Length: 361
Ligand SMILES: Nc1nc2c(ncn2[C@@H]2O[C@H](COP(=O)(O)OP(=O)(O)OP(=O)(O)O)[C@@H](O)[C@H]2O)c(=O)[nH]1
Ligand SMILES: [Mg+2]
Ligand SMILES: [Zn+2]
Image (tube, helix red, strand yellow):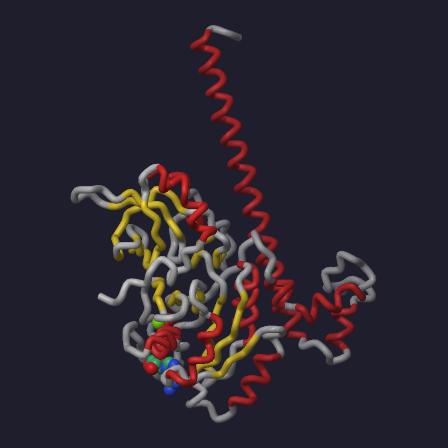
């Protein structure tokens, strides 16, 4: 087993101390989820790491999986004296979370990681950079309230790092872009500035991009499994299967994630505006204040495309993400309305019941 990071190294602070206090008064124990799957979590507490289930009450209340404990969450645990299982009784209110919607457009949302300061969006530069995917990931990252940083791996395999940097710079506006050789500790050390002690970073990006390799280089040891690349299409083999939080000695913590095929937008937060500051900057010059940059007259954004100042694919990408965001927002609203309706029905039953019992009208 590895050294257990101390609560301070895990990011424990006066904020969490205060939020946890009422749970502590009930005899619960504070911890941070360092690994989780559907049935149980590994939680780091002051004495070590314990496996814990989730209290049934939380599972029931967790309607929509976004509320259930995920890696990065601070939680309140009941730890029995005897043999029984530890249980997560409460998830402390998150400062933020990386939430993904379903790209297929259902209202299902899933938190990938909680209480995150930095999102490393990791892509290989060996292949042509996938700018549309980057725009999507940057929108999700900004939407979480964390700060994105683009990490371009495999600089050692790339013949033209400058060209890749230039291409990525057109979509990563106002975002730091760092090329690295993930196999070389010295090359990745510069990333530690984004993972100061007490801070949390998460790695997002396609399978095979080199996310786990990067963490191993930062640790200076082969702790996480890394995988080969499929011949033919150059994709990864989905080597990492669970999200896992790793402490970097003397620094903060990094969450490794399995490469996702697609990351959908949710309706909750609008990170699109932050990911597309070029379009945002043009919008005030459109004739209509609520211009959708579609078929309105005097649209400054479409004029920029016609003048060659804005890539038409970038505008198309913006439209696609906007639509996805709006569909998800409408579904979230529908679910919220259904919930109010359900509570109304329950309340009605309770009142009727009360009247029956008391004999009052
Ligand atoms: N040459 C070179 N190879 C790298 C670099 N980064 C990663 N690799 C290799 O790329 C392969 C995939 O790396 P992983 O770290 O497993 O990729 P991952 O992003 O964690 O992939 P998943 O866990 O499947 O999501 C491994 O064979 C690594 O050795 C790099 O900067 N240079
Ligand atoms: Mg991995
Ligand atoms: Zn417009």
